[in-house]
Length: 368
Picture 1 (cartoon, rainbow, N blue to C red):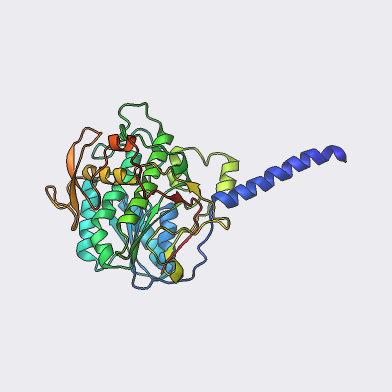
Picture 2 (cartoon, rainbow, N blue to C red):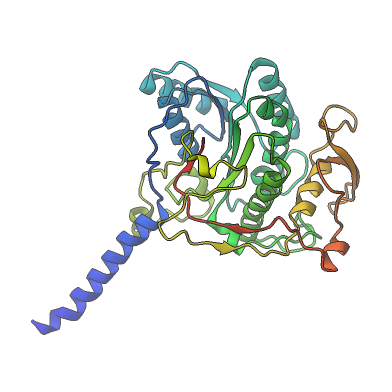
């Protein structure tokens, strides 16, 4: 009998570990029962995976949902499916290609013209560990879509979000950001051998840092900015990774989607515009390298996104700053705060004071 003890113990440990890992990586459902009648929500990448599930859940809660997707056939199908399941006919599909600055501007212009309000912007769309592709405008694909595309979209919709306050911006990041390193001298991977994993981690770290900086800049406006790691699920995002090919990973990741919802019942004590995280019961935090230049990253992205409203026009209230592009595209951008910090200033001990910490484990965000 004793000869079976060790094998059974090993088997039990393996099964138990897999179950715990499944619970850890797959996230959890939002416990809030709050509804959002009359609220307009934009969800990028909402035709599949986590974005689709988020749009579905918010449609159930009465929101006016805009699915913003590159593939309009899939987007229309998803919108039709959500309308049928929820009986909410305020679910619409609109074209948005985050790999095209032109498409982003067209989408934002249409939303600004046709929508009276935008209350929630969920920047969910992403590409993960793809080959060394570039966007329509010549940017490395993962940074271009995951960070720069959403950066431009958010800035173009800021006036509408402010006018709709209280409103919020939700940036879907990833736990992968903790492995990220941003090479400010070669953001476009022109000087190094392309590392698809490192490029993905870089893009998600950029999302987190930019979220911190934008949150600081929007204090007092009624617009809150948050980032989250939604857990891991078996979605099309992982199609380039092979992460779902084994039986173990299929079981661990499962077919479910970690539901993350930006809803409306946050306690008054948490009503500041600072980033608020609803995390695991232990509230674990990963310190985010305090010396990473959030402001530099934020303002450096401005000229890459091109002119805002024609030749060099800045957003209302913005201060023009000259940004030297390390991708060989010098230009004039527009900033909403302090002047651009150069890499030289960064290297001489001028860290970003707004970088704090990033609570990586998020299954829901609760708001007023």
